[in-house]
Length: 307
Image (cartoon, rainbow, N blue to C red; front, side):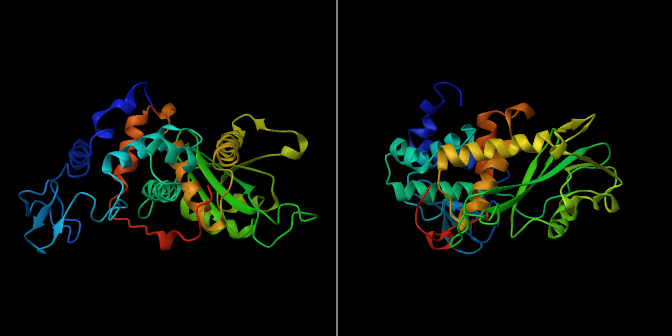
């Protein structure tokens, strides 16, 4: 985030924060958060930011029908938290957020999970790749499964993660039960077969990928081969590096039930990175547009604050 950006009035005044968020989310007209009808409401006198819908007869604000709904945290603090999270390449801990925001640790933890929910894709995504485009696939392992010991188990005690990255584009990461041929349904759903230059390492389950992807290349890491012409998985290795540095250095602990939300956070920042000419401000605006149509309660998150 640019120097002095936190002095923005929308981070200091909840009324200015509300007006700014309304201008961002209601660019096509004021939409009722309950019934979705646009421009069929009136402002309620004496209650700034409250509107009465003529269609469903309910009163609503800009936060109704979003991950901010029913939050007691002032809207200006929500916006500041969103900008901070989007601008921090390796994330920002709930401990740091609660100190900066002046709110409880539990509230900061819950707030950040709501923001991660906003960063997660909504609806079905089009497949990656296509004519002349490179898509790399690889797996990594993180954390420890509950009730499993590390000794003599290799990576079996860890959570498996599959990631797909389009060079010069986006990344999509998935928590998977295990690695193997069971990865193919995810890959085939998210990557175009025709025209895509599919890149992997020599893991046994990828050796049959040519049956689905006519242009499939593998690099042999066991032979210290990391690039052969255009064939490489260095891009996805870089994605994993940022993720692990953030999880180990910033968040430190992550329960299995929360891992998919942390992946959504890192995927979002990478897919909207500065190298694609997306600034911190634009990245935060894109995240905030994702708050609509999503609700996340403390019970739905589950567990206790731990990151």
